[in-house]
Amino acid sequence: MPNPKGNPQNFEPIKSDREKPLEGRLTIRVTKEMEEEVKAQDNPPEFCREAIQEKLDKQKNT
Image 1 (cartoon, rainbow, N blue to C red):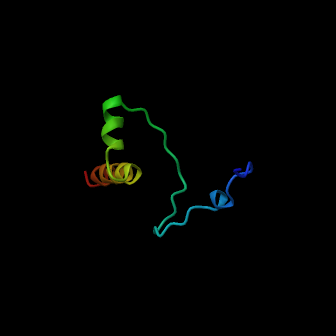
Image 2: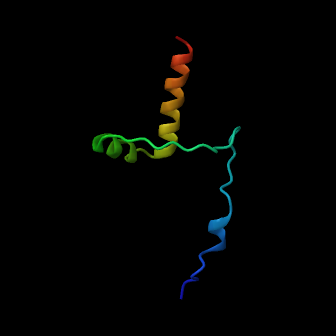
């Protein structure tokens, strides 16, 4: 019988080897086609972070 209070490992914070911690959250609305294409990527969250960072860097340089 499973533990009704959950697995204690689920309450531990996610460890990261990043230079800066991922503390912020964004919620965006996209078309169904965009959602399917992003979800088809190997690592969808990292894909989105890289795309956003690329666009931000591009704007800084113009």
